[in-house]
Length: 272
Image (cartoon, rainbow, N blue to C red; front, side, top):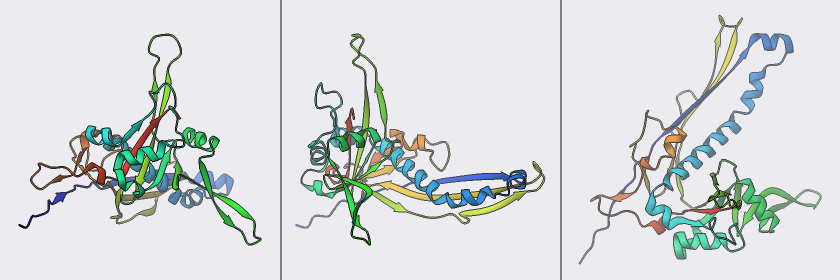
């Protein structure tokens, strides 16, 4: 007897962003500097920050999907002891999320407080290179249990209030994300004119503009974007963070969702 395989369908959203800077002619007249040249040199770095913020907002959104959150979250923040990341935290979190397939995880994104705690515990090992004179140096990129560590203070931080006992039991929760191969599908549809200069000769004695724009897709594996809570065709970061805009990928009949252990995304919630 031949069985047919389920066909699953995923919906993705294109995220459009744009930014402009202006410089008054007067600024150049009195300084001799063209400040837009300085801005132009920083555009690539600006977009790196925007892309990273888009990914973080997307991760916040998908972890609002209850079934996924329960299966892929390791929360140690409420424990009386061992409530900060330690030697076994990452390994346990990866196993909980994907079981025997935990080797698929490659990257950790964490807050600087978490990264500092890992450094203090000597759990981060920095990659090294040897220069032309044979001297070995750190390259500033660390690994935790063999996974690259990216430090980003846009990772979620939540203040937990005191319980009312007056014993000072309030604390801060930090969310760390762990990503594996294929965690995101990335597509760069591009923009017709990604960068351009324009000028307004009649305002403020003349002023120049540098305009930059992009359209990209960062689609988390196993999730469809529903557009259930959208004010426009391109989602803001706040809209990416809404759980209502995400659902687990379903089969054609709509009666089955993707196997949660196939999703190479996990999160750790700790006090540091």
